[in-house]
Amino acid sequence: MRLDGKNGLVFGVANDRSIAWAITEAVVNAGARVGLSYQGERLERRVLPLADRINADLCMQCDVTDDEQLDAYFAKATQVFGKIDFLVHSVAYAPRADLMGRFVETSRDGYRVAQDVSAYSLIELCRRARPLMSEGGSVVALTYYGGEKVIPNYNVMGPGKAALEASVRYLASDLGPENIRVNAISAGPIKTLAAAGIPGFREMLKETAARTPLRRNVTYAEIANTALFLTSEMGSGVTGETIHVDGGYHVMGAPPGPHG
Ligand code: NAD
Image (cartoon, rainbow, N blue to C red; front, top):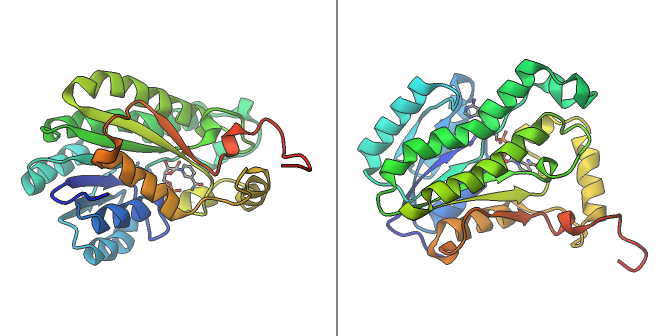
C-alpha cells in the first residue's frame, strides 16, 4: 500500500508511544508527507524531535478546542501543502476525576470537556480539512469499545466515543458526495499516555488478552496498518465504518469456555 504523492495531517502525537505516532511512521514509510501538531507547550519538546525524525513539513501547536489555533494551523497547512489527502484524529481527553468512581457522579464540566475534545473536535477538523481535500480524502478517527459497551472506569469517555462513532457516520454521509471518506478504528487497549489515565488499565490489558479470540493484545503496527489501508486507495469503498482492530474481543458475549 503506497501513499506516494499524498499529504496528510495527523493530530494526536504526544510521544513515541502514541497511536498517532505509529500511524505517522506507517504513512511516512508508505511515501506520504505529513503535518503534525501538539496540544500545548508542555508537549512541544517531545513532539518536535519526532517531527524532525520524519522531516515533517509542518509541526505546530494546535489545541483542538481552540478555534484561533485551529484557524492558524489550517492556514499554515494550506500554505505548506495546498491540498491534503488524509487526516488522522487520534485525540481524546477526559478529566481524571470523571474516569473513576460511579458514572452517575459524572460532572457537567467533565462530560462537556470529554465531548468537546474527543468527539466535537472531529467535526471541526473535518470542516477545516474539507477545502483542502479537493481531490477527495480519507479521515480516520480512533475509538474504543467502551463507546459501545460498558467498560469499568471508562466512564465519561464511553459517551465521548459513542458520540465520536455517530459523528463518523454523519460526516461520512455528509462528505461522501465530495469523495471524502470518514471511518473509525476501534482499537484494543494499548499502553499509551492516555491509557495510563484510566484506573486499572494494566489489569484491563491482562483480562482483555485472556478473553480475546486471538488470546493477546493488539500491536501498534496492527492499528497503524489498518489506518494505512483506510488512507490508501485500498480502502476506497469503505466509509462510515468502525473497524475493530481488537483481536476479535468485541465478538465475545462471555469469557471463552474450555474449548475456546
Ligand atoms: P496519547 O496520549 O498518546 O494520545 C492522545 C492525544 O490526544 C495526545 O497527543 C494529546 O496531546 C491529545 N489531546 C488531548 N487533548 C487535546 C486537545 N485539547 N487538543 C489537541 N490534542 C489533544 O494516547 P493514545 O492512546 O495514543 O490515544 C489516541 C487515541 O486512541 C485516542 O482517541 C484514544 O481514545 C484512542 N484509543 C486508545 C486506546 C488505548 O488503549 N491506548 C484504545 C482505543 C482507542
